[in-house]
Image (cartoon, rainbow, N blue to C red; front, side, top):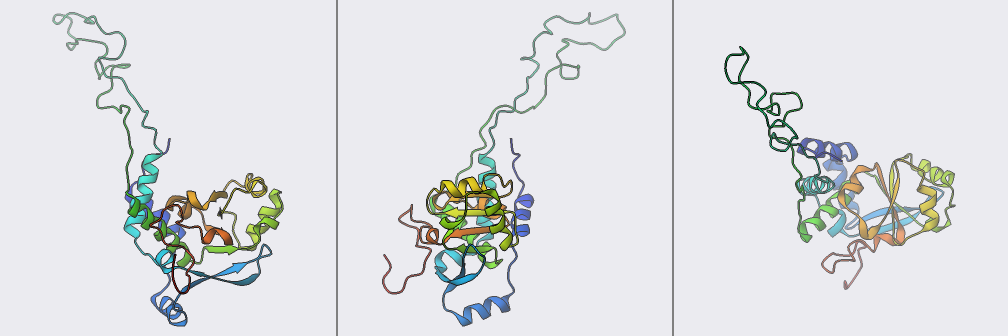
Length: 252
């Protein structure tokens, strides 16, 4: 059962996995282009184009909200089943071990008192719920904040034609090695059994559908690799979420 992470531990995850670009670099990128863009790679690791990205998703900086989201996620993984027995619940100890006076020993009322071996536990854990909640808007902004951190640290990768990748583990390893990593989250638009088999034996990498993304899974991996078709699906489960791809003219 995972332990509840402290605020410092959660921030370590964010700091370890992300690095903010300097203000000069950020200003230079903004000056060259009015919108954000990401390079699109083939499965051979070669850049074959670019993908425009929405600033409403990939330019949202809110470290405190991301931090709160990670703490909430980790707390909700706890089962809360830890339990100890008090002196009233431990079996035995109903008889006074010896008389009150005349023995020269300290007075005792039960062999299940907390100071005795096999006695009851004082202030021990009891089954409880560790559930924390975030409203929809906070979840949305935390997700966008995590994606923004990955984009800023150059750990956000878009790949086209992933369906051409083989179903063997060595094919998945070759793909990851082209991007200098063995620790990656592969985000797909739809279920792909072939890719699922290819990545199933890689202990540090996993596959997730775009509709199931959360800030923890994004930040706990070194790289986030998006299938090109999955970019436009970010936030489509909720009508209030903007599309990830920036479109010219009217937005739907």
